[in-house]
Image (cartoon, rainbow, N blue to C red):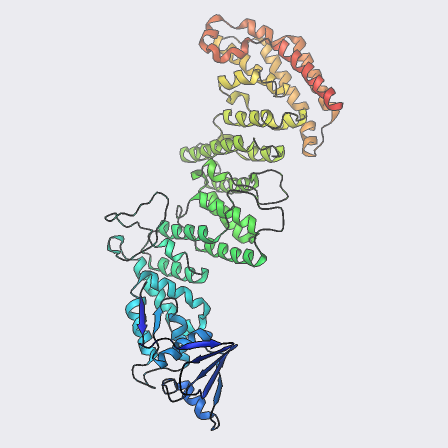
Length: 582
């Protein structure tokens, strides 16, 4: 940081109550009042009035008297800026830097301390310092630009803001190999060495200290040149967001009125909206993880629907690049009992699917689109496996997100089964049969791997109907392997189809949050009827030894006696129902 010293005399200003005066044998004959401070100075014995054109005019307008009183309450920079000008006139040593240049320059202009009044005046020296030191320096230009927020109109009219921005943008566009000035770069893992090359985003941290309006001016000017890739602009926005916006990734908002005041919330909303509006349209200019975090912050701050919609749209465009870690964001609604913000993920998924269907409404077999939606399917199933561990996660939200995916999004249902099993096993062992059926109805047993089917057959947490469906497919697969197609399998499938048809009223009732008792009774009667037919026992006998060897241990579930499983599960369900009644 550069500075300039002017004057040689020691500082003889002192304060007595609310009065500032100069140690001198000559009595004061000029009183200048600024806000609550009163300065007792001299008109002609020291070159104060001869140096300031404004004071010359004001003194000449006053009546001939021994003491002249002048009010300068509107001087830019206030009493501190005026005192710098006064000390310059008295020859007292002053130190100028990027921190006090703006108020000193505006005050000198206000007092008309120009060359037309006296040669070598204060304005001339300040302009020389501005051109040769401040504008030539990187951090000096940024600090000076930041100080203009206290005097925006004066700084704008005097050209300080424009010239600082031009200087900063010129340095940002300088090739990294030619950067020779000092800059701030504190990325994790980065160690600055003597001969290490300058990173391309070397400038992003320093400009993040600026006020949002000034920061926007710089980003707008940089983008207008089209000389930097959009990823660098996106990185600057990311650094600025980390610097000024609250971090909502680590914990939920407090239950009280909030840790931020309404003024802080309003300021943060404004910053967020500006950042979103400045994100380049180029895909990949910012990461999808950054977009999801901004969306979480938007929920926390109560941002406008326009801002949220734009973030959801942008995140949907890049959703297949997301990881499970990017999506694990805490809910920002204090009314939510669950921890993870599953609604945020659902909204982004819906946005992605709208675009996916629009690109190929009839060509679902398109290899690129199929790979894309399959990647999303695996991502969502992995996410469900994590949020299923949330003890307060409503089953309705889990089911909604799982069913939002189209059938083609899942090549297999292993990941979905794991999520369901975790939800039933971890923290939700006391779900009703209707809730379990609601959770398991999306499972397609034909898309389960042999290992998962073997686990499902022995999984006592699954509804009986799901276990029966798995057994059907196990036996049918075994029959295909041996080349047989027993008649009992056809009857079993007809029975299952009849059962599914009978479940339609039950599904309709579930949508209304009620389950008719008649449907439950019909379901148990069908299961007992199926059990009496001995379907599985006969099918198991039809299997050949050769077919069993082909399937190996993976199909060990087919060796289980279905009749015993149905009987055991029926008794278990009855005991569970009695326990719930008690």
